[in-house]
Image (tube, rainbow over all chains, first blue to last red; front, side, top):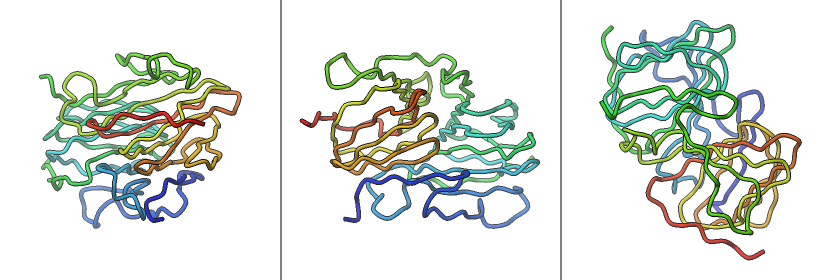
Length: 134
Length: 134
């Protein structure tokens, strides 16, 4: 019963039963970011080797400039922004995909009037991010 | 050079450099489905343990009713449809998430006027799907 298939319903970029949490413990390296793990940390989802998280950055906010050995797959769902990949900024918008290679420094910023929302998929078992000095 | 971070740009539910292929080899078990692997099968993406694919089912079409041991994470991006999970249909629409548990029979159908488009994330190394008799 605990590992059944299911639909997790969306409404206004919130998902049924999925808590909205702070991006990380508060510090000075990021601003106005929330995270929700849509699939992978819920009851009965332990068979998945990867987690599908939804991040939202409010207008003007940014994620930590960081690197880690596990790669990321990102799919933008809403808003406009930039992703910096090894010192090079790229404009991104809805449905653009981003591949963050192992060890690459990366940072997301919301540059438009609405939040920048994106899926970020990672291995369940992974190394910890390390902030990069700017 | 071959494992660099990158942005894969979207335009009208097609992605730069990503081929659109038939869902599977043609047979009678599905109708009007295409697949695109957005991230995971491109050059330099071999470090990823999972593939992020975009499936699109044209209005009135359906995917194979099948089961396999690897779980699926699905995020709907556009359109309306139903997903059948172990004989039970569920309506789905944009941003709804679906977890398909190991061994669960499942099938997607596009029921609206526009295509049903969804991301489907799977392990790179996985067992083959087995069609289920209706």
